[in-house]
Image 1: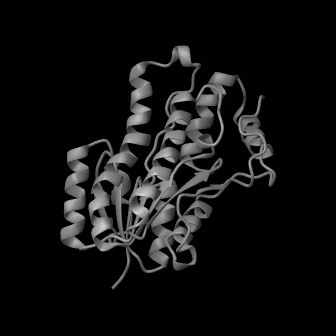
Image 2 (image 1 turned 120 degrees about the horizontal axis):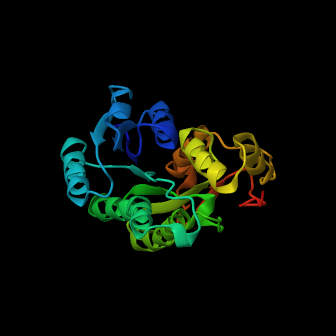
Length: 253
């Protein structure tokens, strides 16, 4: 029987790269995304659900559907997130703060909550959270995002303890600056906040790593596949950065 993986924000970017990588390993794929148009562009062989990860009723129904369709789940990649506002903390509205934490942190909580009974009953599984190097350092003018990404690290550590005796592993991947649409949105916001060109910001992020490069989404996907394999069977509760080794997390331009 094929293994099964569920991926949030799976219709584009890192999530789609994860789905593609797992598909190459003959996993059955189930992606969740808020963007209906993006979902339509994904392979028809993938199961898909349009869903906002903040919608508890929707998340509960999703897991009911997965249980009735698949009967089990081997891997969950809790990958959904937004960049949040880029501004000094005094200029951030409470609504914008809450929206960022609702998606980035509460969304992971809901998927863990409704995955737990299934994982515990089958006594096997891998739960992978997409954090960020922003979950390891501070970043100026990114307080909601940074808070949410530190938050999921604490949640991951706790879930690893709660799930461990059920042979369920929990880990967090901390991507560095990953090339793609998400980074483009971050940089556009930083161009305005820091009065810099796109080229200058890209160069600064690359120079802030030992390997002097940005990251490809496929590198994050490959790490997710590894963390779901027998080769990592005793890897749990770990924070794994895929970032080219960050030296200067928030370059002062």
